[in-house]
Length: 538
Image (cartoon, rainbow, N blue to C red; front, side):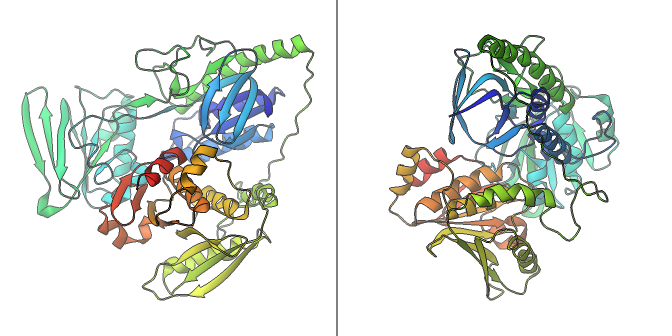
């Protein structure tokens, strides 16, 4: 059992800010994130309104925050929090990687995109209806797209979509936008964007993809229909606000009628030593700058609670060991232009590789395609990082997909194949796949493990991903874990941008997409519990 002075649940800007302040104050702090560190801002391609930063992107901004917190001594864990016991001086957090004890908690769980509720929205999710421009915008290159919403996210994502779409139409429910005038002006001056006010989507439909949409002009009281030309499909991107991620505490802590966390001016919740920060809280402005402010206030408020407990029990704080940042003086990022893996990542992988119990093998299948050359470059660079991983190479025909197949310590195929160069958000999932193959592997609930191991049918799974997608890794890691536990399960991960035939065959217009036995197609992220239930029902 691990005990920390403070645990931050949520690895976005608010969580990182809290971790920075707590760790700098010499308290032991753990940040738990269930998917990918960085939060919602990582899908933002350009950030120009954060004070002191002229221009950056969301991923770079939050990665700098994470490194800063780590340098002060904060620790980080990718895990699914399953339950929290807020009672008593010592709070208990139950995760899929074990139980954690702490004196105080900062809840920075954020919010997720809300469904708009029009007819056909669920049916065509992944086949034209989308919720992430960064993840899915490229699927609509040269096509027409609609954006549902009148807030900051809708305006910002509409501008981003002009990189791909030939025309973007924003459908605003009210008579005006509900965001800053500066970004509205940027929208209105863009020749590729049309804005329709007082407009709602009533229905979308088609055969395998979107081919028509029905709209209502609320002001005129008219219903009209849009039909795509020459059988071409189009996109419907929904940015209709967010739903608070409150599942862990909605029945314990005070929330408002919408489910957002109620806090006081010090970010304290209705429970002692429990604070909220970021988009999970009630607030007028949901921006990275306000998230950081919340995190700092929550942390400094929590410090007083932790100090009182330390003083009560005579606990002495030991100076925490700080990490020394390794920065390349020439590039400030320590990234070589011809390198797949930067030096900081290589260093962070060493303790992971030290945990490997067995030697494993990665079989790299190569042909004469450009994608194959990229895969070869990645594997050759990666092969130098760990002596417990052996890479072997085999030539295949151009008709077969280039891939990396993972074999365990006994030389048995794990059922895990990467038809992708696992960069971007998928790098961690690849490391986890190797860890599961080498042992001991990710901890998993005994009941879920038993359910997966009991599957006695052959199941073939294809997962279409994009390296820019923040939602893909959770599904990839869950299915890979299932494959590592049961020889009847095989999974292949495809970078969909390199496999046009697969994209067309299953009409994939959103990621992640999971195809089971070439028949059942499912879109969206899923955790290991959901995957176990799906596979057991086949």
